[in-house]
Image (cartoon, rainbow, N blue to C red; front, side, top):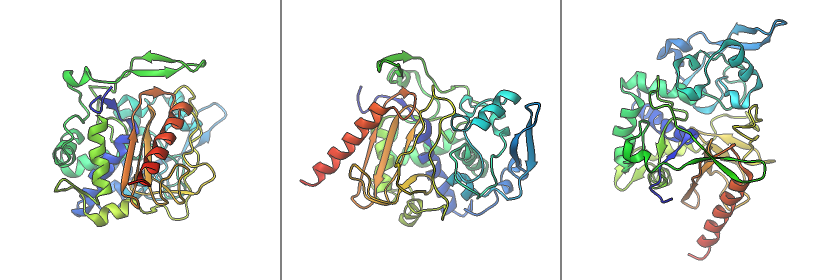
Length: 342
């Protein structure tokens, strides 16, 4: 395994989609508080899931609030993931609606679980943001990412559609067994997708992804290429959910994910589109750092105070694997310890 090994990013794709969206906001082609239904008619009249009736059928009602671009970027739109929502998992079973991970358009028929702007819950909002980017630019995410993000950053081994040569360098996915051992398991993002998942469909390498993180560390600049304005990057690092709290993601599918709270006992917030630790982290990162992860236990953070970033790539299920999390903490702690001697 090397820095050019190919990994499925899963939710680490969201940082790329957020970058694309913020480019369009800089250009005035999207507005943060714009009703998303102005661009995507499917979002004009969303339905809210209000539980299930006595026969087990879902009860739906029209949403009172309008979904905005900001809501989608910050996981406050009302959309959820079935991996961390018992109600959405049940809804998928009852209706036959596909999970978003299959890259099938039927997944966009998902109802909301709460009113837009009411609270935070991790969900498929960034897949909708990907749809917004495509609608505004008249380009697929594959093409837009390549032209406006991957090429300026030199990310030649990143994308949605993997080549034969890249496939030979893909890291094998493993499942953690009850005895702690790892068992190889086949895994591949749908290579004939009905849509490109802005929330989790891309692949990359550690070397490529670090270029994206370095761009964020440098305020939108990478090796002389300006990808985002410095003030845009600063906005992405700021709390964008006000008094709303980022809460624990309680698993509804233990085979895919353990319950997840990156900073137990610490208030944390959400930017565009990252978790923000409001206090210094336990392993050295500064307050105000951003971070997130991918379902196959890959993680990253960017510290704007110390001007450093780090990422750890694995391909292991279920998510939030204790051994990987411990390794990630050791890596972060070692990096900051080293900085003390520079």
